[in-house]
Amino acid sequence: MALGIALAGIGKIARDQHIPSIAKEPGFTLAATASRNPEATVNGVEAFPSLDALLSARPDIPAVSLATPPQARFADAHLALSHGKHVMLEKPPGATLTEVHTLEALARDKGVSLFATWHSREAAAVDAAHQWLRDRTLTRVDIQWKEDVRHWHPGQEWIWEAGGLGVFDPGINALSVMTAILPTPVHLTKARLDFPSNRDTPVAAALRFQGSDEAEITAEFDWLETGPPKWTIDIETSEGAACLSGGGARFEAEGVAVAGADEEYARLYKRFADLIEAGEVEVDLAPMRHVADAFTLGRRVVVDAFDW
Image (cartoon, rainbow, N blue to C red):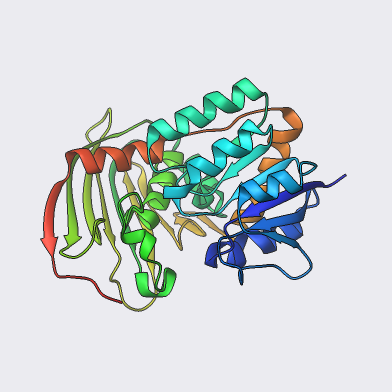
C-alpha cells in the first residue's frame, strides 16, 4: 500500500524531479504540499503555506520530503522528525554538518527513517565506474563540473546568500560521485574559491585532493559556463583510462560502455520507501565534509560582480 508523502518546497527542482518521481514510485502518493508561495501548488493536491500548518492539519501523513533551500531545511526537518515523520532531504542535507548530525540523532531517537540524498550517485553509470575502479591502481582524476547558473537557477537569490553554497550547489554533486566511485577515501589539501564582489558564495572553485596513494586528484567548478554543461570525471589508472560523463549518465573505458536514462530521483524515492520499510537511517556526509573543508581551507579570491 502506498504511503502518503508531503512535499515541502515547490520550486524548480520539485517540479522538474520530485513531483514526477513521486508519481512513478508505487510506494508513495503525493498527499499534500507546503510552500510560502501561494501560487506554488500542484493540481489536485492539498496545499499549505508552511510545513507546520500541513503537519497540524494532516497528522495522518507519515513521510515528508524537503526540497526547500538548505538554509531553511533544518527547521522543517526537525519539526517533521519531532512529529514522528520519516524525512527525505534534498542535497545538501543542511546548511552545516552539525545540523545534519542533530537531525540524524533525532531520527534515531524517534525511531523513524532519515534519508540524506545525493541524487547524482543514482546516475545510470556511477556504479559501473565504481566497479571498474575497484581493482585498479589510481594515478589521476580530473573533475570538470561546469554549467550556467542562469539556466539552472534562474533568479534564485538564495544560492548567493550565506549557506546557499554558490557553485558548490552543483559541485557537491561531483563530490558525491567522487566519494562513491573512488576505492579509498581522499581529503582536501588545497582550494581556491572565487567570490563575486557582490555575493556571499563562490562562483567558481579549484580543488586538490590527496588519498592513500600518489594519485593526482583535482576538481574545477564553474558556474559561468556557456553552452551545454560539462559534467565529466576523467580517470587514469596504471591499467588504463576511463571517463564518466553526463553527470554520471555515461561511462566509457576500454571494453566497457554503460549509459542510461535520467532516473536519479526515481531511484531516490524507491530507496526512501525501502528505508522506511526496513526502519533504517541513511546519512552519508562525505560530500558535505569536502565542501566544509573547502570553505575552511580555501584561498578566497574576489572576482567581478555577478548580476542576473
